[in-house]
Image (cartoon, rainbow over all chains, first blue to last red):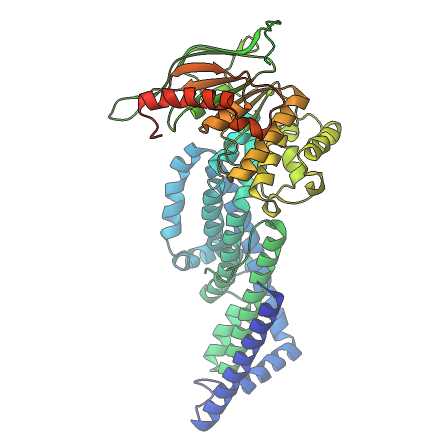
Length: 262
Length: 265
């Protein structure tokens, strides 16, 4: 994409946001919508400022952020490791993969209460829930990616007397990297969802916990302020992964990289 | 003129080589049937035949990528049971790794076979210079044209100084003009390096233009139906393709295929 095109896109996005917020503010004033149904944008900004000044939002953000990052890392590392095992040893695929798929079909939201009972109301249970959600996209994409190596590249390595490990290191793994990054991108967005779901089920801290609390108090502006933070967090993490992808998988063409995929 | 006074022992000897692919619920496919040939050290042999005549199968067996069938196939007196460090292979596609620079791609055999990059850097640059690509050493394959990529593929096959160079329709994907230039480049490399080359092609003029000897194969089951010595002088120039001698040789090969109904011309 041309740099000029990117700048124009950004400008359009910002303009859309300003227009949308203005219309929102106007509609609430014009139709006199009560703040417990939908808060006005200015009220949301006020709640955001108050939350930051009192230190409540930063403190709760750090809890959720920690859960997201740790859960994502754990899920990604496990997904990558199992993906490599399954991708390298066809026997592993036949033995393990059906069970992994069966595990994936169980909604993680449904097992979240069990994990909370097992691991308590602290961060550990949230990290585990997040990890179980982040695990699968990384696993599935690693397996597919390790199969993506073109036959002629593998044959070239075989003809050069390469060992199985060399074929993996020199061709299969680099060839799988674009797929792995797609998995990581999906996983990091899901990780935010995982942490919030975990906090909904049972927690003593975190932005999800705070949403429930403010919900009970009918503090809609406060809830919206948190949603704003969560969405910024999701966008930030997504950009981090795609930025890393651009550096690592530098040989790929990036036009059309617009999907979040979650 | 081919040197007939010094009889060197064959580098490669195939005796009654057969290769059969089993097919589920059906007749097995006979890819190679009783294939016999010798290739001497330093010889340039081309194998020509219609699509599906098993010529690529033969080359892949020689490269150790495919297991051989029955019969014997030896390289320097030893049976070929798998890939060899002393063989270089060039495929129809350049098969370059997109995340490696041109130089790193050329050094791939060195890395795989742990021969030490430092000791081979000079040779890699020299070979790149020979094909006019030394200025592209730090570029990535995507920045190169198809002909340049294929030249990198050839240089890569030569970097570890193999005794035998196997080429599987290496210029099949190139346009006619690039292809002729590549033929000349290849002959120049061969003259400088003195390698033994076996090149598979379906182009009859290319087979004759490059070779000391042309092995002519029939369509399935793949058999050798003739071996034609090319006594054209070297170094060869493209203008030779319009000489009567050249025409006689290509006509002889075409005649074989015509008799088998494998060609329309």
